[in-house]
Length: 361
Image (cartoon, rainbow, N blue to C red; front, side, top):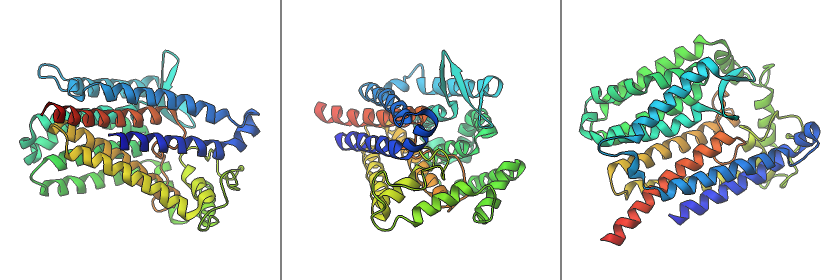
């Protein structure tokens, strides 16, 4: 699907441009190099796009062999990586989410999203009728529970996204929908408990409710100032004022506010439209996939990207309490870029399978 491929590359290029715009001030101030973060992101893009092309040319069916499932192995590896984070993880800004192996530092919670997408698609496609009963859904949850518990320990937002991938994939597969409502209510209760059981999470709700008067609400408030001052067409590329020390690390999760400030309402709508078209292409591939396994891989990728776009924009606009969720293909970060590009590679592999089947027919 060349539409999906070129749209992905376009969004990535768009992100690199805005990472330079959003980070150049702080990069010059702290590193005497305006290209410091941009150069690093270009390296991330090279690795990510390389992984995307490799996965695109490998048949996705290799992950679900009759005698041995690589999808199940992926879940086991991701679970072990998350357990390793608990004992050997690196601390950054008060959070233990990183793991260093052979000199490479990455976030296993992000990599785990790929493992969960593959495993859930594998489990649901192997026995779709079992998901007509809540016991079938519960069985998949039990397999994923250790991974979810480890992720939720330090990164509740990623755990919610992973749980959402599992939930939506199983919901789409099942012919019976009612029991998902019960599980949804139970999940909401559990998330509420996890939020109020940890001090900094409940503090974020207080900040959200009164961001203007909160001592810790500065980042969100400055982001709102950036959006409010944008107007219809924005200040122009590179002319943001809030990136100049007002929004800490504006090239990370808050980059959408800089996009709004510099390109205005028109630019913000255009960005969301790009994501909508990308998701539509994934939906089309899912509907035309050669088998249920390929279709459910697309469902998992669709859910992950859509959820992260919604959560990121909602946080930046203070629609929901603050949480660390990257804007796909745009926010600065090596692990997230690698994961999102790899997911698109899986979808392109499913798309290539459709093309091969049509040629054979």
